[in-house]
Image (tube, chains in turn brown, yellow):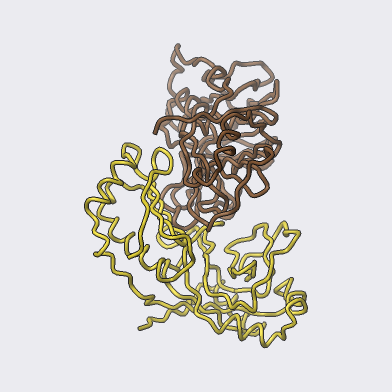
Amino acid sequence: MIEVLQAGFQSSLQDAGRFGYRSYGVPWSGPMDNYNAGFARELVRNDPNATLIEFYQRGPELLFAKEAIVAVTGLYFGLKINGESKELYKAYRVKSGERLEIITKAASNFGYIAIAGGFKTELVLGSASYYPGITERSRLEKGQQLQFHEQDLPQIPALSRLRSLETVFDTSEIPVLLGPEYDRLSEDQQKLLWSTSHKLGRNISRMGYRFKPVPNLNLSGILTGPVQAGTVQLTPGGELIVLMRDAQTTGGYARILQLLPEAISILSQQLPGTRMKFVKSEP
Amino acid sequence: MSAIRIRPFGKHTLLIEWPAVISPEIHAELLAYRKLVKLFSDQIAETVISYNAIALHLKPTQSPSELKKELEETLSLNEVVAAKPSVRWELPVCYEPQLALDLETFLRDKQLSLEQLIQEHTGVDYHIYFCGFLPGFIYLGGLNEELHHPRLSNPRTRVPAGSVGIAGSQTGIYPQDSPGGWNLIGRCPVPIFDPSNSKHPSPFNAGNLLRFVPVSYKEFKEIEKQVALGVYVLTKKEIQ
């Protein structure tokens, strides 16, 4: 068992996602950044649907009442186990009574803590992923007790350190396909869309990332229609909203672009103020 | 059947669209088409519908442009036979100020009496179009024009579950506590979305009809008790 001493910021449990209920208006959820979540799971030899902790900007502090093997991934975070600095992208054995603490070294978005066997929690509509109105909790809370699937702890293999992923995220281009309402943009607006380095605003969450408006780039709304993670909506006020993992299933803004699946993970780790260009990709 | 447009929407999704109007007839065509598409369910992971569109989220190895071709080659649009609604749900709603924060303002703004509001809001069979916005939130069509009203300029940070509201030309029920900017005119004592029921988290299906039935505060409390005891059953009527 593990006690949450500090919850961190917007920390949640996530498995691969909640599938099969979109027609009820239930989003897929799942990790914002599948690269880092995947690495964390691989390091502790978990299967792709095992439940891990996702945190945002500030990580949790955990007290272990049972021995476990853990791995932490994320850009620009630090890790301490019982006060001692450890590396990310590496599996560690944590003993009973030890504390795990995430340090924020520089501004960063999402990080992950995986535990061998995976966290054990109630499945709601087939998934452990936290979502308001679906799971009882929508955030990790101070004092919460976390269970995990105990298993015979394997030896930590010698080659258990993975390369950090910083280079994957060091890009100013987002590969996209054209969205259903792209054709509604005038020729000038289309040029503006591709030529502008769009500035990511402060308003970013698991539901969506908003880019600052660009003068003359806007579209009126549509009759509410299907949307998905990676849909780029253009509002009448000129905001570009990229829908993320917890986005609703339908929306009323013009859907001008659609991110390639891997681009969603890459965008998720970009910081407010970053400038990015959309780049047309082949379908 | 109306003309439809089929095209990929991202790498793993196919979008099928009808003319962009809110119409029970178009929606019935869409539902009939959705039935036919089930022939290809080995390729489809999930289906989302709206007023005039079907999104087919495909399984990872499937290609939307391939499926588009198959749909266009195999499905004859003449086979699409739209059905009339065959089910009507009745949902109790209590129109009392202590349960509906905007009821009094709404009546004043619209120059309506409470009796008129109840009569107009409950005197219609609403068409259930689809679920979206929030888990279990159903988009309803058919709100009497007299009751159309702009949404609040300052949305609330918390609207209680079961609240019945009006925004623009829409009326709806909040399936859970959530932020929201609709004018709250009533409250339904029956939960309309149950995430613990993985078979049928919502009782309603697209294409069903729904009618609000006015109940007193006393009846509201009584129904709440029955719901808590697990003995309340929603009224469902088969219609011709």
